[in-house]
Image (cartoon, rainbow, N blue to C red; front, side, top):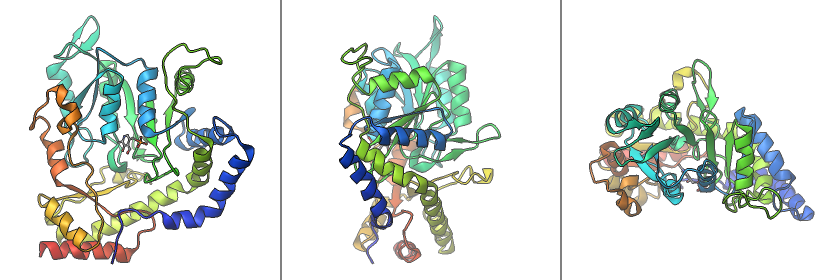
Length: 394
Ligand SMILES: Cc1ncc(COP(=O)(O)O)c(C=O)c1O
């Protein structure tokens, strides 16, 4: 039985007429850039996330980049983030000229560790003329937590740290659109708790476009205006450029498709969660929870529906590579997110980190394995995955 990591064909079949009608409308209008479909999508996402402002951009990467540029973060600044994420998280920080500062992860959630973050701030940073400065005399100006695999970081802790140290808080919510977090007795959506939240609509995301697309949400109106200017090369009035931005626009065709898909997002995330629950129960029933580490659900007790949206279902095993090979031999597709921690990436060598600096991120890179998950995955396919895993550990 062949089990792909992700199969969106059924999703497309169900929506294809609506998607074609929406894209036909754009083609007939010949309005491709900054038109009504984007305005509709921005309003829909702002409503969905309960935030006043949403600014569509060209990708999740450009969402991060536009935010950093609009905040004028650059040379001499340091930005704290996790040591375990997609390259874009750290790459964008470097790209604006700032220095990424990595923090180890919590081995249970794969997200930035709040205790490691606090340790770094208390041990390695100090205040100079009101500014928080690190051992390399860079000004720590922002914190970029990543809600990895569809699970929010410990945002109560992140917010407290940001407040205490006067840091900008930029959420990399590329993998977490719609995820809920139990905030201060209530709840909040991923991306809406800090100064800005960045989403990716890369096709494989829970809400995927038919190409690249992204978006930033925020609460501050002036900042939203600045982002809108930033996504058009800093152009305020026509051909009047006050600052440097980029071509970061989300086009009408992508927005039209995303408008069709957004109303289904919660249903898809619920189906992913059901699939995750099924995997977890089946792995336990097969006695495999002793052999492989299953994903945790730290906010399940909050009773929030989207306490985890399972963008990925990630297990771990010290025998990860052998297990993966075993799955491949049985036509089960898996993925490694990510085979290197960020400080191990060749590009980040210049930062001077060494092996062992972030042991949990390094261990996750060696041991983690993403299993097939998508809303329409069949129970039969999942049972086959568990059966093959059991066979491996026999
Ligand atoms: C955590 C994280 N940040 C940023 C990005 C960048 O998003 P995009 O691929 O839309 O540029 C991704 C995309 O995979 C991601 O997973």
